[in-house]
Amino acid sequence: MSDMDAHNMEMVGMETNTEPRSGVLYIVATPIGNLEDMTFRAVRILGEVAVIAAEDTRHSRKLLTHFGISTPLTSCFAHNEMQKREQLVERLLKGDDIALISDAGTPAICDPGSMLVQLCVEKGVRVVPVPGASAVIAGLSAAGLPTDMFTFVGFVPAKKSERVAFLQRWGTLEHTLVAYEAPHRLLASLEDISTHLGEKRELVVARELTKVHEELFRGEAAQAHAYFSTQRVKGEIVLLLRAQPKPEVRESVEETLLRLLKAGDQSLRQVSKEVALIHPISGSEAYSRALELQREPKD
Image (cartoon, rainbow, N blue to C red):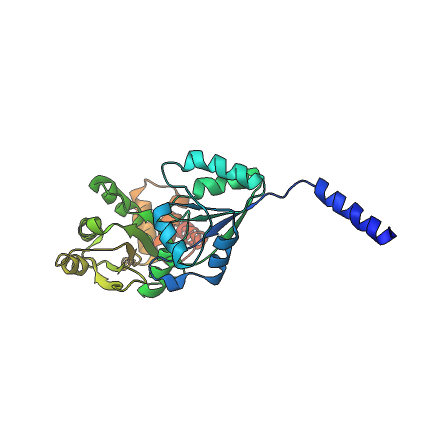
């Protein structure tokens, strides 16, 4: 036996003694409607992993059959994720690669999966995103609203009292607001938006994105309510609100400072911060001008 052969046998022995690597959890996005939005990488990964954790195995089996994928499925949905994640992480730690998918779109975004991802991170398991379709991003990209900054707030609450509080909290943002809404609650939400944020509040209702009956309604809250009142609303909905318009400022910086200082219920620094929110000046500049006003002789 040559020295090279002996060396190779030694190397093989070294490899068999090493600890097996942990598996990888792949977060695989699937189409939100149009099956052509499935990526080549997603198809490959789903075909290579040991098992696919799916929100609804019956729904996902149709997707896998369409792409000729025979990988075993196991369920991981809202009501079993806390328990199921322990089993999945155990398999990952033993070396199995696992893919996580939801019924549509990107897993763990308002869908099951976030608790599994958190446990993987805690246990040192590698988590790899396989990006693709996302209703939030799809709706935002085509809405025609500012996209340099936006806030996604998940589903609009179902109960009226909670929905009103939700709108009052988030509806005053100075950038685009994005939420999910169920079709049977759309009219109630549009009515509450009209009542509490104004009938002329500009918004977009993105419905059935990427599907045959895709629709993007752009207009004011009252107009949207009137439009959707004439039909039975179907399909998943992304609701987008234009930023709360800033009120027109009719007084000067000095007038605002004097008004707030005269009220006497805030410190000079608090007054300066409030002035900076109303006028296009910094808090430090507002503070300096407030000091100057206080130094000026009073008639």
